[in-house]
Image 1 (cartoon, rainbow, N blue to C red):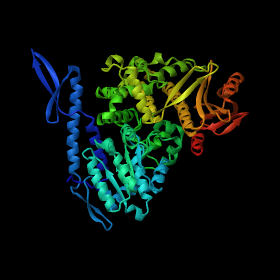
Image 2 (image 1 turned 180 degrees about the vertical axis):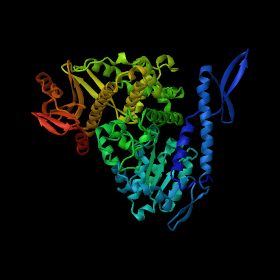
Image 3 (image 1 turned 120 degrees about the horizontal axis):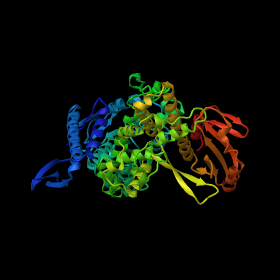
Image 4 (image 1 turned 90 degrees about the horizontal axis):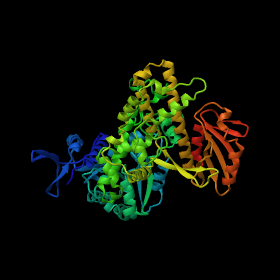
Length: 632
């Protein structure tokens, strides 16, 4: 019988699962060298089904393959040592009348489970917990609930929180199973039978997709256990695995709950951290230390004084995924790229996304994701990936400062742009075409875009044109702002390292960097408003309109009432007529009302106070975003 590892340290199971997930996507075996006619040839040697297999490896690919094999061996050693630190027993003591129960997987019940969830009682709840609450406390049904999303978006915390809401009698019937890659569906099935026999009614199974045979047998959870009255909650980070499961096995017998997108109102309410700037900088995960969610605090020793303002430093946490470009880069690689790779390697159904696997195995998937995120339009095109890298943010800021009416400056004359761009590329793991080993095709971009949509990392907003109504497009917005803003920090860090840029006065350097960051925040704030408005009004049409000269940053159209509201989004605290000149333009308003219906409101969303200037309403951006939670 497989041993169970109950532990006083709740994080051990999570560490084991994380290491096993990384091992699963790294190559096994070894590299051998053969000399044929005085020439060296390299082979990747692995054993499958008792047979030794050798595959040829090109000389230039040997170092990368060796590094991955060595990494796997290191992790396997760490995993072995970690498992030795937990008590080895095949019995779990249940504090109720059932006494000792023998399980095949890591099952926690009773006092053991109670200690695991104790800390989460004081945390604020994320909004999606309402779906989980309705499922747990609602009537029996033959469906399972699946909670999935990227790492650090609150999945496990949500489960622990719902456990604290159970009555003492209900809690005695609850169990938590932590799956590892060594577990099989048969193991979990055996434990579910034992739990059912002993009266357990609420079972939460974490990282269930680590089981290799999960998809093939997933119907077991709905048909056998949920169908007999058990409430089964499955969770994990493997979004593609759950998508395959729904399509291949569960169909309409599952409820999907995605946690990746965290809107501003949740960022403020749950973490207790206020301000659009903080959301722009850190938004995307629940890891940031706040007053309502965890006890992490600011560490001033780790804060870069050039990229932290006085307000931001109050809540800076160097362990936050988006604390700086390095942490963001690691998050892209471990939470996003490896999420994709595990899905493609673990399931036979991953053939549709085979091109992503090719990119990952060559270490270039993160490069492509970062190039798209960095691109000012987030374009998923072959040209974006292949063109020689130049920071779009620096280019836009340079153009705007050159046109500055009061103090124009050409910042490109005051920096070594080549060195700065090279530094940014190194920080973000970005490659130019000649450095890429995989030839990028449009199919690569289509698959990456499709998968990032599945992860809820991106959403497309309609882009319409007037008077050329036939010309339509899409705007891609990113749902995790911190991911994008970390790239801005990489730009600032490299500009500050540049010798030519340092020759400018401190005041001039500050003006340039503040202008650059302000323009990035402005574009990001516009994307945030578009994204959250689109999600808040599923029954309305939310889009952007372009004219031959100028645009409306956002239009919200009620297609039933034939009315619309028009918006400008400005990263400013001031109110000036220039901000709403397009909103008051008779030609633009005439074309808009003719196409979409009567204009019933004109708005400027900005960072100042709510006020009114004639028929233009100024809306504070934080208040506007919080109000969206009450719209549905």
